[in-house]
Amino acid sequence: MPRSANETQALLRSTDNTVAAFLTFLAEEQVSARTAQLYLGHLGRFAAWLREQYQADLVDTTSHDLREYRALLAARQQPASVNAALAALQRFYGWARDTGRVKANPTAKLKPIASQPLAPQGFTSVERQRLRREAERAGPMADAIVTTILNTGVRVDELVRLTWADVTLLPRSGKAAIRKGKGDKA
Image (cartoon, rainbow, N blue to C red; front, side, top):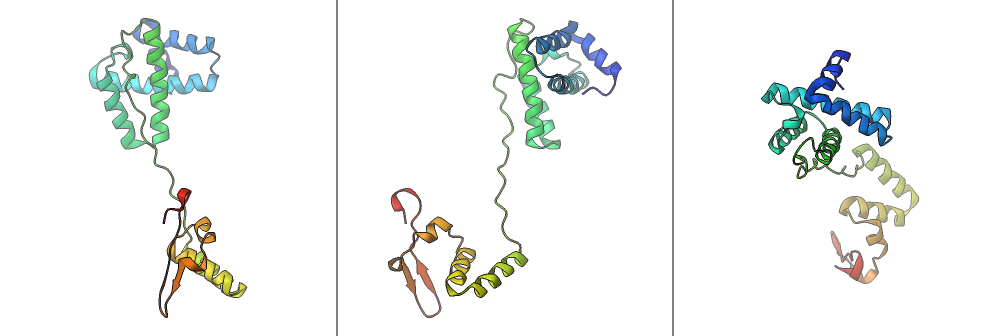
């Protein structure tokens, strides 16, 4: 959001009250006050950057400007924050195109930043050791199951499907044929 009331007023006065008209549109669409404030903040930051970089107004934005701004944000912020800013700009420029304030929507081909899925968290070495100790105390079957899962990375459902015919035990090693998912792929 713009940092002060003066910045907010300057933004509302800029581009022939386009932003003020957009805020009126958001109110008519019954967008929450918090969401409208977030949109105004994103628009204000983008407008300030655009003026500083190119001495241009919001209605003069090109798709190149938006890609450059997205890259700038991506270097500084998490994907979710960048995508929130892009969503606000997409909403604004979609409305601006629909109301004839811009000829074409410069965000039309702007893609969000891909968010990286969280990797599953593994056990710490202390947790692994505790699990091994408890499995050994529980008996040979629990010990074999825990040891197999920890040492091979086999999934529980794959381990459950194992039969003795799938397992080959040798004096100091062994192997198991693991069947995965649909179609029993080996």
